[in-house]
Length: 376
Image 1: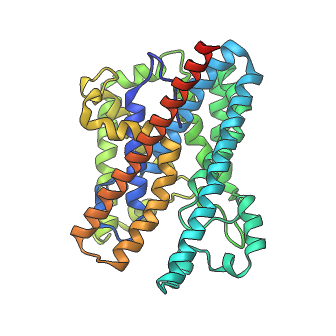
Image 2 (image 1 turned 30 degrees about the vertical axis):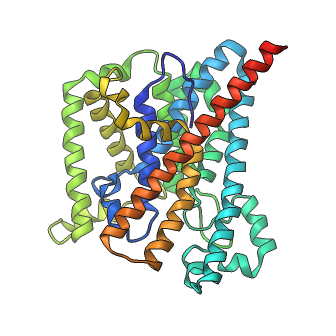
């Protein structure tokens, strides 16, 4: 989730990754009217699709360079090290999240939260459920993304090796797994019942698409971006997606039944093809309208989103926890739009503060290390 700070850094990745973190926070607050500003209400894809795509893009961009200069083994160790960080972050978030929900439910007599956030059975049988939590089989509500990202990262080294040598074959293989998963129902089991909310066999395809685009050395993506036909088609599909999504939100009476059955409900678990097409269409339009050198990307007003994109893992974890806090405050104090707005803004400010603090700590650590090397 984090890139080099080299001269080739693309600020658009940080910007939209930061905005995705904010959107995930807003979307995870139940009945939050402010979440109407997020992308999920206006098309087939949402912040999760953006998150996974950028993750694939950045890990391929970074570690393909490592592989070229230091070899595959070093690159693979780096990727697996990052996967371990994700696992540790998830376990820490899991423990803090469950403890906070359990405390609030008991302290304020809100026992319904135990069912709403899927932790009642954990409290009844903590040893068994914690074991399955460590195995990523049991996940309380909203703790689905990091396990998906961990699996995608942990299995990525051989895919990167193939992407560097035979990128089209790697993409075709990923597509084959995606089709098989949707055709034969491949998924990972959840405990005590059900399957993963984000099917990794399906979502890996969007991750690999991002990686494939990052390593496109034939200029095919660049050529597609300049195509007027591709741009017009993307705009048309975005408008079509908007109309279908709004119809689903406000009633499908005006839609032909054959159309409604194709797109409603939106299949997020198995990453429906129209979600991928919508995201890629949106990405194409944004890249055309927001060039890499756009001066406004360096405006101070965008700094909060940029820094939340730079410190994506920490901000994501904070956002998941803050979404629960926001939900509890809205339920406890007031469900009014004004209070929802205040809590939503406060959450984004807190996420930005976490990002700023982590950046400051890293800077202090780097300065201290440099000073010690000079003294020695």
